[in-house]
Image (cartoon, rainbow, N blue to C red; front, side, top):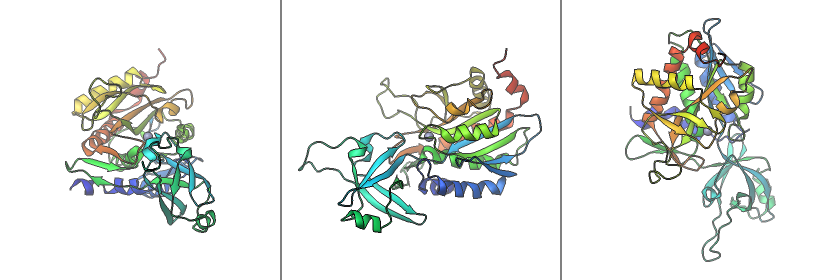
Length: 357
Ligand SMILES: [Zn+2]
């Protein structure tokens, strides 16, 4: 199987359009796939969708999630001349937006494509570096024309997905690896966990609105009250930077990320030890990662009396842009690690990690 074939489901996931709060397309697909394998499918009321594989009573509830939303923008106005005004959804550096092709989802089966105008040097040497000053040009000549095409305020605007496998056969580019890769891994893990021997009840699926404040993870974990929460999410590796410089942490192809520290979630040292142990025993490649950003683990940890929560990180170059690069070999490390956790986690391990002695 070549990489494109291996990644077929992931490609489908990455092609969907879904900023925070607009995850409908992805949720529909996730729900269909989850129902093929899960004993039960549950949803929280923000839109997170989770498949359940029932385990032994009194044994841990293990929750594994990717987030379904992607960064993008939202229509907040149409100028008299028919240009679209927007606000960013999720953290995007303004320079990422300039000159990009984007599409407005105007209905379930229609998108309108446009380009974020770049000002030619002939007119000005300076570009507007504030997304709210930028205009999406959809080719309309008036506000009335844009409205007649179905454009409305509140609609989502997403980057056009230029998806391809790179020349080396391992690296793959997409707009939405953060975090459709996590959604795809959750689906594959659910499928395999169904036929594995382990005592745990597995909750596996996708959360919503991660990019705007880890919101779906908050409601989904309150609903499920897992004993262990693991998010599979992309973290920005800095292997393209000069070594030693700020941000030059992590590399593509070097395995999953042990995110021992991020500003919203400090990894329980017992979990770190557990990860190292099972990854070493099984020859799963990993690397340590200190992050400046957060993941769903940051909000999941507040569920109930406090929840063991962490990330099995997927390395990605240039996240929160139109083109993030991942390496399929890392995908396999992440997946193998999550499966190893499902297989080896149990009540005895949980008790060791519960911060009560
Ligand atoms: Zn993410």
